[in-house]
Image (cartoon, rainbow over all chains, first blue to last red; front, side, top):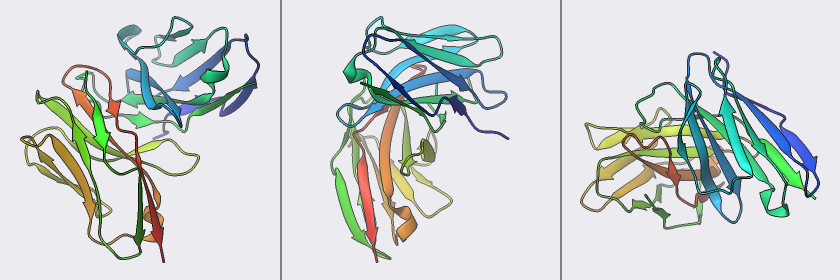
Length: 114
Length: 113
């Protein structure tokens, strides 16, 4: 079974631009979550989707948004990029909808903002 | 909201020696507990989990963790480490039906020959 696939793996943007990251969950998984990982703040929850509905959202500004499609694939978008948005963005999928927190992570998309 | 404290940021250890990584969480309500491992330039991999039942949980590669509700702890142990155990380890907690994980800051384990 293929794992969680994230694209692109690496990207470089400049301040003010926007970026869209994509995530394909493990087949059959309907819950998709996004996390931001930085050396200073560690791993922080962005949002979680199940069946195209956002069920929980972290404490990030409105520049961070996401969505989930009917095939469970998900995208997240960051607009008006700031230097502090440089991070590893991790997508994870879950085999259940019970909210147990058992997640399977992709390898991440590493965003560098110049 | 949950907060998770990993008491050690760096743990150097010799090969074949035991290791313990400490984790405490804030809430005493029903929680799910996890340890994840992250190797360089990779995502996180689930190491082991406590959802319910026996308070001692084990992984397939020799790690074990014990859920202690009274002390709100979920410490990770391995009796004999290998060079390949060099990685960063994250403790994580989820409240029931919260649909998110709260992670600790991570503990970097460096195993030396």
